[in-house]
Length: 70
Figure 1 (cartoon, rainbow, N blue to C red):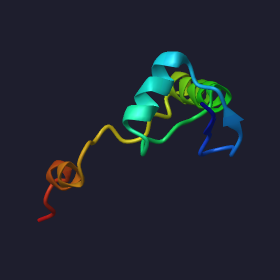
Figure 2: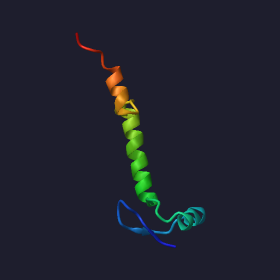
Figure 3: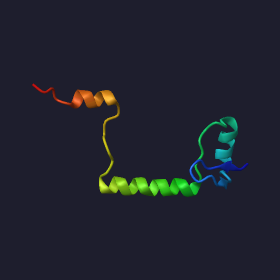
Figure 4: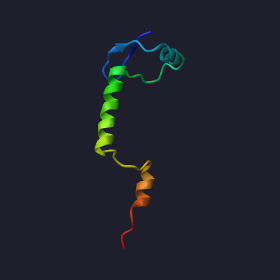
């Protein structure tokens, strides 16, 4: 079974267990191992640099964390 990566549009051969999951759930997004490794490295670099972004999970949390102006 060959799958096309959504990021680089390159076909790749998934592992047996992943191929079985793809057959059962064909509409799932798949990323090739090269792209997955590249993204993982970028995330780790950002995490080490302290650029994790906002720690808020929901937009409503942002509103509640703001202090009211008098």
